[in-house]
Image (cartoon, rainbow, N blue to C red):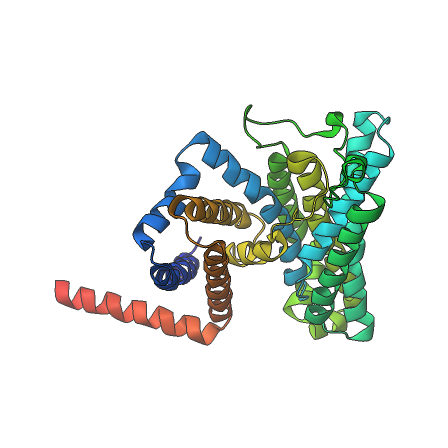
Length: 369
């Protein structure tokens, strides 16, 4: 790696770290307004997820859907299409996976488990491909279409788990909690650490991150997708069918989000329930941006944001601040990270930051001389 590349990565890391620090600093003001101690709050938030094996395992549990959704975001963003629909794609994957698992409980696990995961990925992929098709052939803004599809998916998801797939026990007892019955125990993913919720889906997510890197940087299709993202007009002039690759990008992006939903069903909750997403569809975007839209960079980024999500929950219980305060802090992190990414994408701003560091180095050399 050249010195210029190392300096560029250092600057990017400093900008992102500064954005995260800025978000927490502003969050401290709100914690003070809630009449709580921000030092105590952040102490719990930042140390809790790593203070015990349970905390670390739960961090990786939260990291898994973030990593999968983020991989889909990377594929679509690298192709030049903004996928904001991870939330809806994840819900469609979750409800489809639960439906298949409950519909064919007598199938051998060796057949049913892959079918459940593939069906979840397919449902998310088709939901994403719809937005890609609208963008490619009807010029519908993908941000608008994916946000609207999120709302449609959320309503469809609730409709299915409240009507067609609702747990028969909920109906018999008259409680009516919107959730499906438990899927067959044979489909539950194995625990990596006994006594925790950390499951083998995490290992699958890491493996897929490596495969996505190989796909995007070592295959012809991946190169063409990145070429479309870098310059669609130039790619079209070179004979690349831009429209097809936009649809493919959204198909793959939705498939990863749908797989995240399916893994939440078979690995964590063992059923489809109302709040299964927990905002992973949006948090995955931030993790992808923090990982600089690189399939390998998103692995530590997802661990970090999984720790922040878990730490925020621990903080809320430890110092008894309003639950809405946790959402405020998470929103600030999203706002600051997205803003930092916009700064990093403007070369003129990066050059200004680089010049500041260069002048600082020159002054230090003059002082030492």
